[in-house]
Image 1: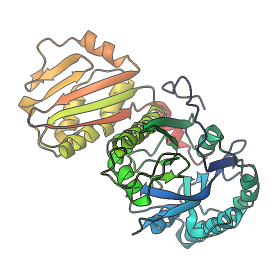
Image 2 (image 1 turned 180 degrees about the horizontal axis):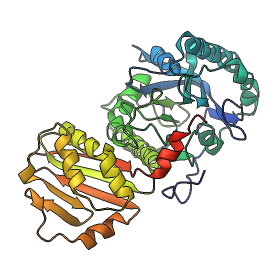
Image 3 (image 1 turned 90 degrees about the vertical axis):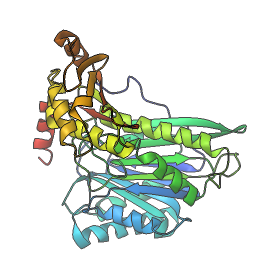
Image 4 (image 1 turned 135 degrees about the vertical axis):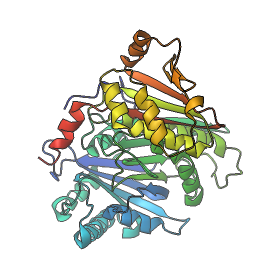
Length: 411
């Protein structure tokens, strides 16, 4: 599969995180000749936080992780097992049994309790996952796990992704350096609802699980929940954030701590980076599109309008065809079900205003608008003229290649 034309020109080099190790291998779960199994280990119990899909048909690993985190501010993790090629979703009791078998095998390998093992699966829905077919690899992965294997870890969790997704940030906390590393996967079935496809973020900061959860939940809306490829929310969406505590920085234990703001900003930047990488790798995508809405009656309303435009097949196919069909944007705003006034609406493609006051802009130039649409990155700005609400979403075009990829996904 060709690498997306929107892929980064180079991949981030993630530094080691003290206390975190990982290894990956080819387990043959679905794919041949590529890695599809990841084991991540924490030398000491790591604080953990998570957000998950709000799909009413969640996968068995989502159920497992939710149960571990439910009602606890002291959740700890010693191991994470991720498989690609099989989502272990809509697999009934077989799926629950597979998660338990995987957790028990990983716990035996890592010498920890099964409740300290977190799981994630991605791939085909509805196919039973044969845990014994891959858990026998865990001992070998444990033996060769090391702290400088982030790139291979990111490759091991890919499905239809065309490139691995990695990001890192370093933040100074009163003279003490703290690192945050993250990997993610996602290319199709991307319209997150409280999470994104799969993302695993690790920091060497010392933070309790309660505060960690607050910070993760705070940033999901403007990062992972602000990207969409195809309007479809996965059964398996999972973001897990771990704090190993290997930094020399004193512990962060309260939102009132003045240092939390700097850490929070770095975490948000990393999550935004990973989310952008996901939408840049949208299946068949050739263009990255920002939908910027302002002047709405509220931020929530602005988000819903931006989402309506970003998810519109007619808008996305027009972008694929480099057609400056701003009438489709008008349509998507009007159908969103949010307060809008046709005669106050202003729409711009890049720096070219195309519509205002309920009609085409008097100075509209088809040539200038079409030039904007030929770019790899496009900004569509919408001003509703009704209030102070604003939001941004990122999407991609919808091409013939998307149909080709998904038409034979199980073949």
